[in-house]
Image 1 (cartoon, rainbow, N blue to C red):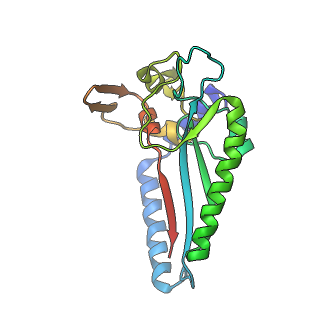
Image 2: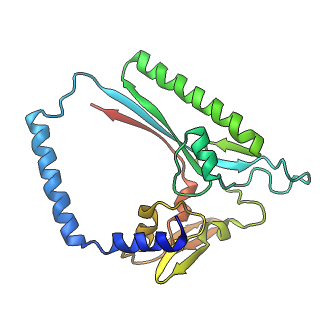
Length: 214
């Protein structure tokens, strides 16, 4: 998606009347609650699924001076498709999803085997590109030649729409940054002070999310 078409899509989302949307959402919620009460969604077995998020970091194979090893690295979109992973908030993120299974011992083992299989195959594809997939709580090493502040806060203004340079082109992420926010996104901690006009700092958060259906 080009920058201008992304900005146009964000404008379309922001043009939706918020009060009307909330009213529609409340109506839908009442319907779901009614169906739950009637037993429409009753299930004879529990189901378990999984989302597993990663960073890509550089193994620095192209730089013999070892400058920038293990810094965040942008994942080519075609490479994501090749390994069967989903894009996430930042260009350095990648998300694996496991097939839902019955929530029993065999189902849990099946998910474990699928995760191992997918990850092994993904590593075999990313390693030749000088990339390593890392699952970590908060990665602090920026891409080679950039500071963390530059990478996380870089953005452009497209006719009034703020587009984060290093964020994936999912409209919902950019729309959230262009909504009615009282202030910029701010991270303040010892030795850290980042103010961003987009959601990009949240891309440093990766998680493992089990999904449980009763």
